[in-house]
Length: 306
Image (cartoon, rainbow, N blue to C red; front, side, top):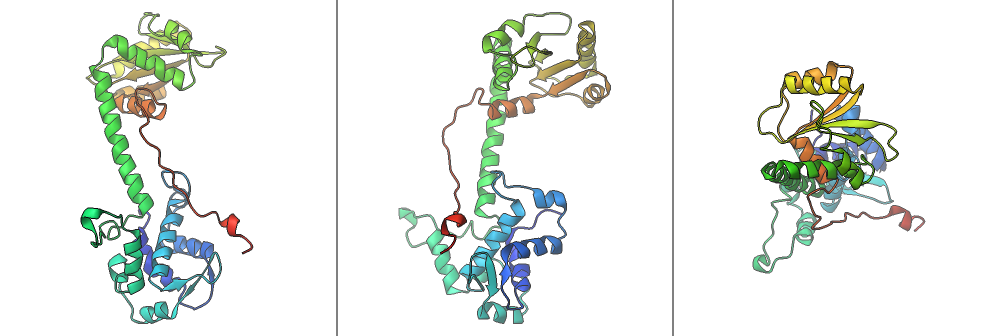
């Protein structure tokens, strides 16, 4: 099952605190993970930023919203306790608690006003579109980033496909060097595109010292690359007594081609167009940085001992 959103967590979280005692937030997170029957993989899934586990982050936002509505409070850092309002609410046996439900409390509405984006054209109008969704701010940011990233990769691949074969060779060189192969760019340029030896487009150093080499085949194609092309490349590797190769294409590989590459003794990595674009973005080949956004959180250690 998917990891629950923060709105689905609010009522179970409040119920866990219904005994009126102080609870460590960490203990509540672990109990909620058990109650939602999360797998180890789901518990270890991180935010796209890699700064915190996704489930923990969503529980954290559920806690924030319940506190802002006056249903929970923290007498000490890291501890949570239900309020009289929270206890009264549970006695009413609500079917769910979500953002719309919390808007009945004046403190929560004021919290929303403080969080809204200031806009002169919408002065005095409360924009709750984000609040009413199931996404935390981190989720919304991750979704926006994913959309931008996917669009960039698609546009980048189309750009590469429209270039000449010679330019595609340059892209391959730049990417391999950026990934740490080929020594210097000059070394890589002198190797890739110079072999022309039966199915091999180039030979590139696996490391800067040249302790091993990787054979390269690069195809700027629109059609599907099938098994025969991979068999030809594998045969060329055997002819060189080589056991490592990478086949790069701007298109896709057939299932037979992928299956064949997985069963042969030679290690052949298949890099299709989507993967090519992804690596180009990851290693800043053909793309430029236009902005950086830092996400910060309170440094709890700074306030330790207060």
